[in-house]
Length: 158
Image 1 (cartoon, helix red, strand yellow):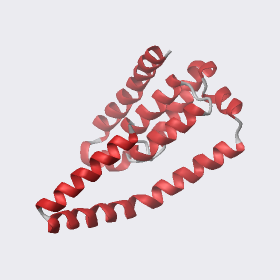
Image 2: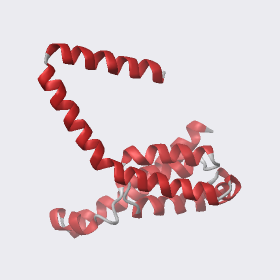
Image 3: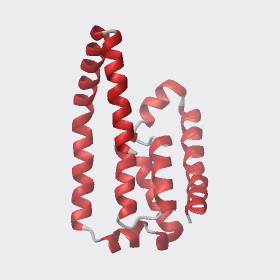
Image 4: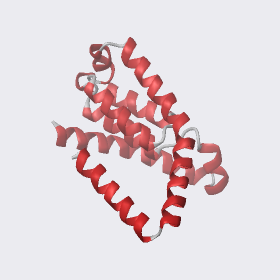
């Protein structure tokens, strides 16, 4: 599947170049700049996850956030997701690594959904634009909704 996607991307890039070489070069420059901006964040998170996986055995990960950790594991990952500021393009590969090393689907579902929807770190900015009441309602409801997401993902994947 990866070969197919890369081949399709290469073909479309070639067709774009044939149609308008100037715009294609400009788009490649912009995408490279975006990649340069994202790379430091990406490397830090990958290093942290790599170090965590190097020091923690899969059994340890499984005991904290595996299927057998139950609702306590779901709560733990939901809290971690709520207070962590990681971009989605880093979070999903990290979630895959954690799943391969013993994490549970419900726990990863709670982690990813709170990571994307709850912003403890960004609360001050959100309060400034939306007000205190709306900010706490939105974050609180998103936090609760993440448990529903975790249950659905766990049910579908089990």
